[in-house]
Length: 580
Image 1 (cartoon, rainbow, N blue to C red):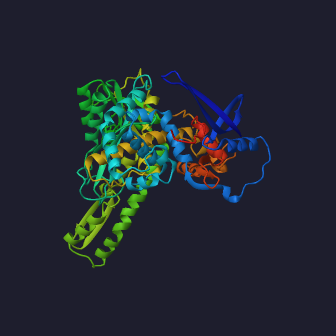
Image 2: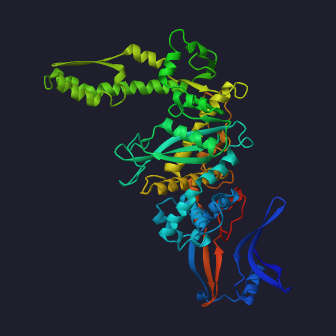
Image 3: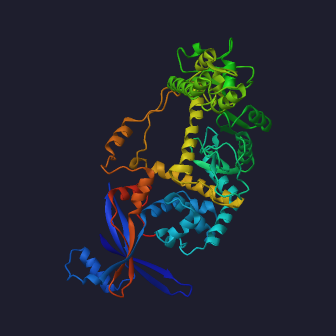
């Protein structure tokens, strides 16, 4: 370490030249043949004599020890995690993406960074700002709740412009030559009873007794979030898909795109609508009844197709101008067969006490027996595979074995339908494109549970709910890049093996398996999960050090651990003393 004197000269309008001197405590180190400097503290406010003493001490000169009271650490604030996330935000151009500089932008940026570092309610976040360097670094520590809500309203008003810039960055032809966009819908429950968007619908969180909102996420093929839309909690998937298509066309000006969605999202009716709009393609999967129709006698989908390969291209008059890629995954087939057998047995076990009660005469009357059977028969969604015979004094349950066998024959088989021509996308790449929806599912896990804790929704006003979800989406955009940058420091598989067969399940690389078993990276430093890494970075504090009883306060960083130093190197920055 050494003390560096930085001299800056400035000529005023009057012609006078002024000189400004700064004294910085720096650490120099070498990376290969390059010498780098890291600023640890700004000593400019210290008396010149004291600065000379610090410089002399670093040169190895000996001094008489000062009294214990001469140096005090007056405050220590967590710094590393907010500094890293803020640095990543700047490298992605996020501040400029949000809008012009000002108080609202600073508050909105602080809300996004906070959502990554420490997801919590807005009021809890406001209190936390004063307990980390984020508050003083972005000058938001003294913000009021009214300012927070005003910043949310400001951000929401800019949503279309923000998303249009992200779409140009990640969905335009230069960045996305395949011209594909992934879209899916999820939901989160709402606390309270006065939110206009809250409604009862299909809960993906398993909260059947709660009102909810729904939101559709649009990403590029790698799963990088681009846009999000909020819907009432009872919105059907296809309706949300129509809205997604409209803002891709009108808001983003992208007319030559392929929308990739699951079988519940892009239905036949939605495909008919896409055909009328023109210019937009689709890639999705058929539902089970449609697959069964293709597999009927003399149909194009026969099991012999999979004798030599796990995928085959077929055609059918019901899908003019489209390609159908039939796939069979043996591992998925075995799992579905096992699960069906368990559910059939569970259904029989659930009804066994009723059958015994009827046989013993403890339960009689067809109506009474039917009511009790109705409560249990479809508990495991297997009612379609049973025949029931109910009389006043008998109850019999029989499996429809032929139907079970016919369904089992299609286990592991799925059929992808697409409008993309074979010259643009071969069958193997069609399967890969559909499997990219796993990236979107990873985003939903990040937004809802793993990283950003979007749920439950506590806001009452409709626009505040939309702003909250937008903040979470922008935080997910930050998290996506941080997860990729820090893959070597976490359990993430940095280089998953290429699949020779796109239908086969994904495999973990040997390097990732070895890394997980050792629980250390190739630098022999402990591995963390993403949240654990942020918590470790938070232990890198910035301390206010006071020299002398009435001396100035000198902001000074704690000594970083090798993992903390490596984390900043991986996002191409040195550890900053301040956030700006």
